[in-house]
Image 1 (cartoon, one colour):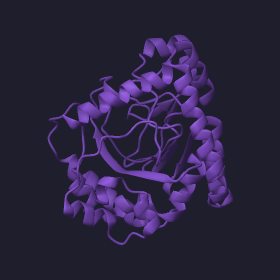
Image 2 (cartoon, helix red, strand yellow):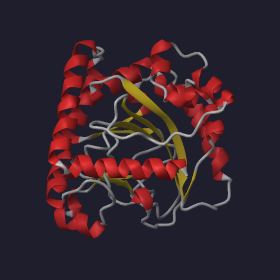
Image 3 (cartoon, one colour):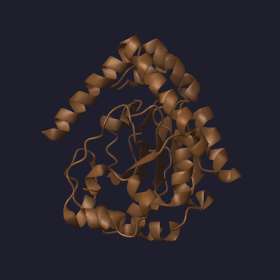
Length: 294
């Protein structure tokens, strides 16, 4: 019930910001002020990571790999992800086209959860957002090869913040029939937002095709351990429906600590809080959702 109420409130807030010019202008002005205040405190990052930020600013998506990101703890991450993927692979198909491990299962693999809090990754995220980071965790899932176009398999644009940062990692080889991340460029997205007067919700394939030729839809295919780094507010995107085989992936998600809308977060148990915060320093702890810090 709380989740439904929060989502309804967020949708109403997005509608007001998106459709009432004085409110939208105020939101944008406050965001610009925060960016200016924080600019002197932004971390210095290596040239190869600065190139990722540049690609996000220009195009909205950068397709790379875990090896090229070279984040501390990647080998441990891969071991934990392989164990979790194997666990959900054998589960019956009872849900609406996808399955996830529980939060307890993910937290029990600290190499997975805490990879998203490694300092070099936080530096990369902060450099793109321009603001202190809020980490929303690791979402591992199996997308069943049903070919159905439902939920996030439909075109949409995330609206939680002015800038967003996600790292999607393929846990199996993903080709065009395997449900890759599909998107249109930032340039097309900016035009679509205006022409469709888009604020929130899903856009059909037919409506997208009428605005952007299908030949310009891009698919982030790749072998296992491909990493798709995306600003999911900057581009219209979707998870293509898997048709031939299930897709296994994990998504690490980030916003600023002053997002446009709040994400529903259920209360954490004492054991979950202990697992989520074990071994973290002050900066890493400050990035966690408040539910893990009470």
